[in-house]
Image (cartoon, rainbow, N blue to C red):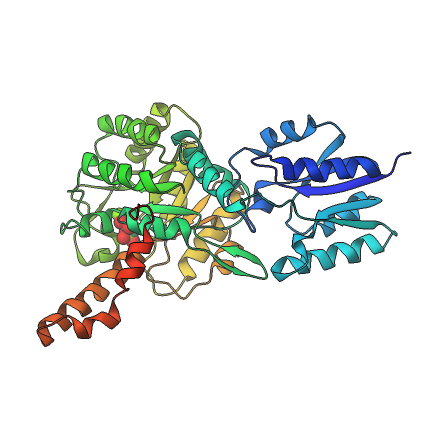
Length: 434
Ligand code: SPV
Ligand code: MG
């Protein structure tokens, strides 16, 4: 039997670097490619542009590749132990930094059965940054962007979403990454909040900013970002209009709409029972969900039902009954909202819901119970967390401080220290220099 050679890769945009490593592998035996799943790849990179099955077909058709197997983690060691290859090939770019840990794990595993790791010089001349910019542009087409939310949820990780209220805040969320030994941490998706979309316009959050205005903002946002967007659809509006609105958002490349089970003059949920707010009848809301499901043209677009029972003090039982009814009506996810100071009632809801429904995505918005850690939410069965208003809440006090300082001093000098430099703001959006 020929020896086996294990090579791990994501293979999204395939280039000569991939071929170099496969050619090398062929010299030693039958090449088995450990193809990183979406979940594995996103530990350090962005969601691949191509779906797993598409990447698999491409790699299977490269000569010398005898088998493609799923690699479910960034770490090679679990798959190495499973397949026990005679050789493993890797570029020498993993000798330093955070990747070194994975090199050590691979050496430790291969030593267990006397396998050999061959390190080859990382192929020079590939500007991986350029490739990732290229991938970003590809990911910004409506079809790819729309479907990416469902793909992210399917990885089983907790999907981290944050409010954006302008293209600039979108750019920040698109680009911000921090890295530690566990991987790269970034926001996975953006939230178009009715609260912040109204507030930036100086209007109250009462469904007064119409769809055309909000769509025009999304259009500008989509011009300069690539991450998926979840749209806060308030009550969804009139039943007769809802299907049309779903199709408009879907066509733009929005990934999901969340509609809340309220009726009449919609007020922001965080007012709770301090203002008059009316919950929609369960069956009437199910009709709205059905209308949306019927109207959409792709399964990628998600219709998510938001339950206000805890906000309006209608009780846990009511929240759960509604959740199951909304799922039966076709909702692709349940957002359970709370204005409690601690996560208790959300944890209870999620655990009770999960006892009867393992798979429907659960979404939460920890604004009032901000103490909770993401890992705890994940352990209750939550799939997606939305930080619903933080960037706008951060920016207003920052602007106010500077404006006050100018008024107080009759000049701008004292405000300079609170502002980014002109050099930095010019650098922020490249392309204006030439
Ligand atoms: C929003 O962001 O507009 C929301 C979430 O609907 S909340 O403000 O908490 O109601
Ligand atoms: Mg809202």
